[in-house]
Amino acid sequence: MTISENLKNFKKALPKDVTLVAVSKTKPVSDLMEAYHAGQRVFGENKIQEMEAKWQKMPEDIEWHMIGHVQRNKVKYMAPFVSLIHAVDSLKLLKEINKEALKNNRTIKCLLQIKIAEEESKFGMDEADAASLLASEAFKKLQNIKIVGLMGMATFTDDERQISEEFQKLKDVFEKFKIQDPRFKILSMGMSGDYKIAIEHGSNMVRVGSAIFGERNYE
Ligand SMILES: *Cc1c(COP(=O)(O)O)cnc(C)c1O
Image (cartoon, rainbow, N blue to C red; front, top):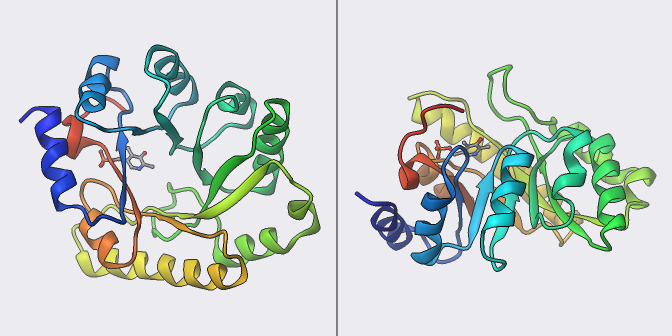
């Protein structure tokens, strides 16, 4: 199937209140443009410079989401245009994003990444660290960032019960934080292999790559 057919089928199956981030990492601009012409406007990339290069070549009405781990020294390249940073995992990184947002006269929306998987390789904060970050004076001083929700990745496994438990854990943390801060609106969880389970557990933003663009040859 073509990218636009995949996209159409995917959109049909997706509940209305769930935002689709089309994860286009490693894919050429021609593939992204095919998705764009099929109506897709939200794209996710995991490398800042690759995202910047695509941003320069593509139409202006696209929302660019940084879904990968962020190196502080590269924040400046995306600060002028990025619309949501999904994987924020430290106050240090937030301070850098705030600084670059200020230079660009913007407020940049961010999600905190919470670690829910058992794999050591996945990034993210635990609930307690996230709570103390949100309560800190240093955080409250940052005027040019806005935390609008949480992001997480489940363990890469066939065990659906485990995936369910991990997504439910993230949903519970999200609801707790949301009571304290009504700006919490986005719960980013679910990828090609597990988005259905994520939506069952309250996800309202899924990050889907291979199910739309096909398998990737490299990461
Ligand atoms: C690559 C990636 C995705 C999409 O993965 P697929 O399995 O291709 O849907 C989602 N989220 C993050 C953080 C990724 O790096």
